[in-house]
Every structure is written in structure tokens, then in C-alpha cells.
Amino acid sequence: MYNTKKAKWAVFFGLSPILLIYVVMAVVPIIISFYYSFYDWNGLTDRKFIGLENYIEIFTDSNFWNSFKNNIIIILAGLLVTIPLGFCTALALNKALKGIKFYRMAFFLPVVISAAIISLVWGFVFNVEHGLINSFLEMIGLDGLTRNWLGNPNIAIYSVSVTYIWSNFGLYMVIFLAAIQTVPKEIIEAALIDGANGWVRLWKVIIPSIKETMVVAIIFSISSSFRAFDLLFVLTGGGPSKSTEIMTLYMYENTFQFMRFGYGSAISVVILVISFIVISIVQFSANTDRKKKLKH
Image (cartoon, rainbow, N blue to C red):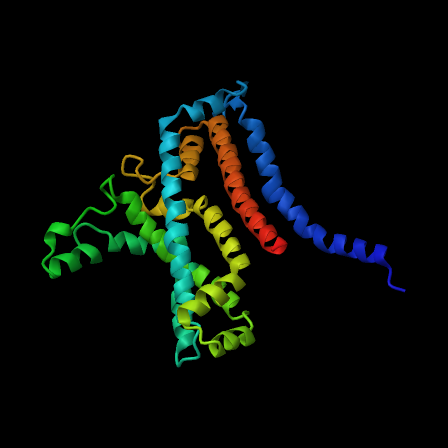
């Protein structure tokens, strides 16, 4: 007879190493950050309990809200450009053509390249004097359009957004490609028999069939935008004049440059809460939409 109790214990012991690693690497740091967020501490002298003062300072800190605004721009770049671009690329590469595997690999390649290398490459692309963009504009006689792409505070955040999009859209291409290939061919063939053209098949068959994947992609895109630290740290360091500084960079600056461990911990807690709220709203909206469809 199958022993359910033993099976449950087997599953528990099998998962326990992963759970332990997760607790040590994720849960414990969150608890420690939450604890230190109530203190004023520079890492050397004695800690001083200050209650909610760090959180009050955050909500009156113009630099924090500037980093929040920059994070919103990165999030929108992911939602409005990276995901649609990944989806369109997946549709284009969902073909049985010669050399298609090469193109899939080429588009996915930026995902596996380290952020440091990507930042160095795009730093050269955006270089004022010898960068590819300005050199190309000068070559075709559009010298007036050349810019200091990373040195101008008014456009720097949009320049780094281009780098962020390029380094991430290949991941969504793979995600959507895998989802599209799971759509039953019978449904697509039935739509063809009914005379549905490409646009109708896309909107009435393919997109509804992969909506769950789209929700996952949206959630992943939002969460990854909060983790764009390494890319921006190497590319601009948050400059010029904090114009590309996102919340994680601002947290790093306060914690390790200004030695304000309590304030940095409070910022990390706020980032966690904001990301949790945003992702929960997306998940709730998706679940509500799913329940409405089930009722109909």
C-alpha cells in the first residue's frame, strides 16, 4: 500500500536543503535589514535606536523620489518595449527555416553575458567622441543629432534604458517562443479552415492561449527592473547628477559610501514593500480576469 505519510516526509527531506538555502540567503537578510532599519548606525560605533526616523526621512528625501522615478522609467521600458519586442521576435522566429536556431541563439546571447561586459560594450557605443552612435550620425551628415548620451542628465536614463532593453528582451523571446509552441496546432489549423488571417489568429488564438505566460513575463519584468543595479552601477554609477540612479543604487550609496547602514536598510525594506505591492496588484488583476472568464 502506498504510504502517504512517508511520501510527505520524503518530499520534505528532499526539499529541505533548498528551503534552508532560501531561508539563509533571502529570509534572514530581510529580517536583519528590517531590524537595522530602526537604528542609526555607521557600522563602527554603537547602534542608536531611532524608531521610524529612517522611514520618515525616506518619504521626505528628494533623492529617494528621484531614484523612484528612474525605477518607474526602467519598469515602463520593460513593460512597453522589452516584453513586446520579445514577443514579436518570438513570433518571427517561430518558423521552421534554415538557420533559425542561429538567430534564436544570437538574440538570446545578451541574456547570458555578464552585466559588466554589457555595460562596457554599451559604454563604447554611447561614447561621445568615438562611439558608434555619434560616429554613424556624423558619417551620414547628422552632426547636429550627436549627443553626450550618458553625460547629459536629461537623456541619460533613456540611454541606459536602451541598454536594459537590449540585455533582457532575448529572455522574453525564449519564454514566449516556448509558450507559442505549446499552442495546439489543431486550434490554429481550425482557425485557418475558418478563413482567419494572421492577425485574427494572433489576437483570437495565440494571445489568449498564452495569457498566463504573459502575466509571468510582466511579473518577472517588474521584479528584474528593481534588480538592474549591476548594469547601471558599471555603466553610469547612477550619474550624471543622479539622473540614472535607481532605488537599489541609492540604497548602495547610503549603505556603503555614506556608511548609513540603518538608512540603507530602511530603503531596502521600502524597495521590498513597493515591489511586493506592484507584483501583487498585477497578480490580483490577472486572477480577477481569470475568474470573470470562468464565470462566463
